[in-house]
Image 1 (spheres, protein in one colour):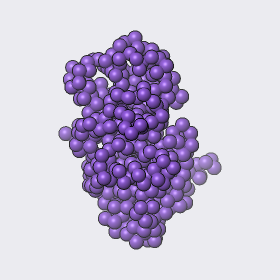
Image 2 (tube, protein in one colour):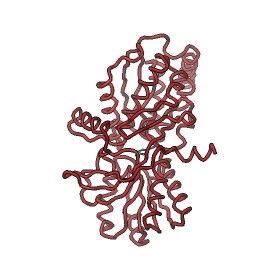
Image 3 (cartoon, protein in one colour):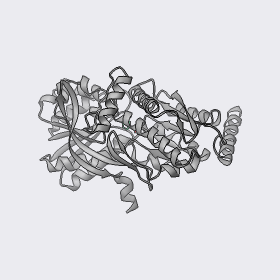
Image 4 (spheres, protein in one colour):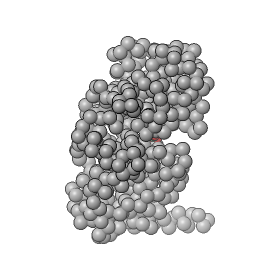
Length: 391
Ligand code: DHB
């Protein structure tokens, strides 16, 4: 009974905010950054927070006459907590933007609140294709798994790989990766078998044993950022590094945050993704250098670039909307283009997803450290799931 009263009071507050426009005609624009800062996905929170703070350091905290105020909250990787924090930030703190969102369930949970309160939600990490369809106020600066994965299927089929086993974390992005790979690879005549491993506390060993027995040309892997090291350890323990089975997948498994600690087992892994710390451009060199300098030498990964670009999107959107929030700010974000550390990007005005280059990369040792070295570029890739729907 009490719970219902509290909830409906919060609902009324959200509705009033929507009617009155967010946070009235203020001088401040508060941004609520909700991230997993603790728990198994804390590396994502750490990377994004560092990148957001770097962007603010480099670009100041006044945009279109508004003082930008950042509020960072730890959702511990639990979706109910993300939702509660989003509600508190919107109702009590009157934030004009919510942002961050480390995993798919954490991005989906607050989507209805963003819609109801007309508060833009900038998704900087989560990558299941459908997320942007959960609210017209969601704009994404990370990527989608199908966007990163279809180029992997094409590369594999063009490079003599005929039989593949896929092994993915059993939730949104993993299932997206499995479907995107299997669909594109089998359309080109490839043979594919699918396996899924639980997201929480994964034990890869029994699956890796099956892979060793099936003897495919390649093992396609998706695990979320941070989990790749654990996977690689079990890959070696099962002797798969000596089996001749090639390791391929979207770039999450050879995440820059942990790649250098994996050792020689990672050498030669072929992945496709939108960001490598080794990306050869002046913008990226400056980004990597400044990020490392501000964070005790930590190497930025693809999550960091999602956070950095997310802040850029908010700043440029506010300039274009003359400091207005709500629907005006989302509309201002649509169609924006810029040169990111990852390369050229555009916010697709139809889908609010990011259009970007996908690079084919190989893990190599460069100056003593392991990197994903890009060797081919597929330019201006849209999320293929939404592109197919709009045809
Ligand atoms: C998601 C999380 C990740 O850490 C990642 O690398 C890709 C996708 C997600 O939950 O959407």
